[in-house]
Length: 571
DNA sequence: CGGCAATACTG
DNA sequence: CAGTAT
DNA sequence: GCCG
Image: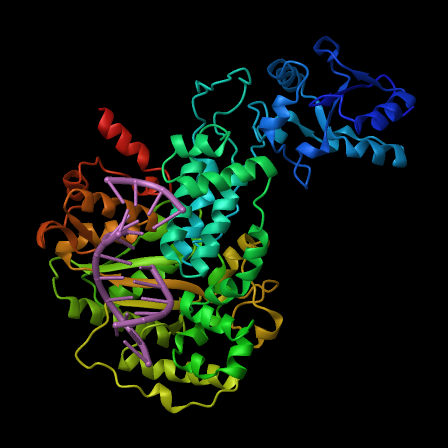
């Protein structure tokens, strides 16, 4: 018989009305319902009342009530189940098994998985990282790629974590609050796409707090009292999620902002423009071109954002970053041998994959930003001629000449005839201090990196918008267009500039807030007190002035640097 | 309650 | 200046 | 939305 010699333990108890039918079926098929701890053994199967599971049946919800409803001793039962690694089934599956006359225990979770606890013996650590990208959406590549390493970077934490009810010992102190983290991330995305940046920021900070919490959050109040950046509103939402397994209405509001997100993922389209288009009921870029073409040629860089929408959402391997760096550096050395260029950004923070490549230009003892800007412009121009640079998002007159045909082509493709707009008047006296570029390796150069991106996920264009795409087809081995950002700094500001361009964005905000709290101001130009420069050349000195010990670039990742503050305070 | 990092480029 | 970007 |  199907359930021969199997014992069934029903949780939270086997007294609930609806259990009657099930237990009868089990008994008829050779199984036995048990009702004491002593009967639990290797042949026991745990049945969980469906009312305490989320819709996907992957997690326990309403755990407070679940615990309260136990007739047996909760701690003891859970410990036994965990110790023996018993499988847990939603009660509803019994009916299904009977119908199919098949029971495959292997497809079900252990109690640790249901509780969201990772067992030490289980080395397939299922780290949850939704990654919006960011930043990113995170829109900005920086924010989205920061999570990539979390799993490898997080050293196995000391297992001396003291929990209030510490019976469930063999667990990693890394609590899995992924339901909460995902909700915070979604709320961040929602408010960010609505342009409510400060509210969005609150959710981002709350998310970071929760991610760094080493234990499972048990209640909204628990979170509000013990974690930073959790106030009454978020606490309430946390409680709802813990009780119900989800946040009512969240998915619906996310769906409402999906068009905003689609637009905002395009370079040059921010919250305002996205909202504007959404108000006009536009859903695709094609809608915009057809119904409000002014919005497109008003800011031509949006056309480039559209054309490279997909490529610019793809990640770059460290190896490929290095290849780009070498190309730029060798060109720079030909044009201006005394100049230096350094690769900063997420690459230097050690990310395995980067959203873009940030390059900082400078020359020993050079304080002349006009000269720095000119040299960068010359490098861009040379690389444009070599067809390495596909497009630029800022232009001086010379670069503009090269870009004109590109932009004309884009206008033509999307059916807007506005040729004259491009002949704009450039500010003669001004040399740009930054250039954002789209660049491609040659097919030959790119070939060795191709395998890295076979299964890569990235934000796709809607089909009706694909006619403008200049992104590489994912099935082809053609090079992907990459975002390369050029910046420059005065020699005397090298330290402050590195600090700025290494980031991460959240790290910069954090350390600058710290400066503010000490009556100082930190920018890419230096650390100031009442507009008077304190330090700008030496990165380490800046840390010292802020009462911090030096934080390695690799630690300037979300949630990593706070430890350093603790250390400096404790020592 | 006001503040939330600070700055560069475009039109 | 507002908007978007880093 | 949270903090001081």
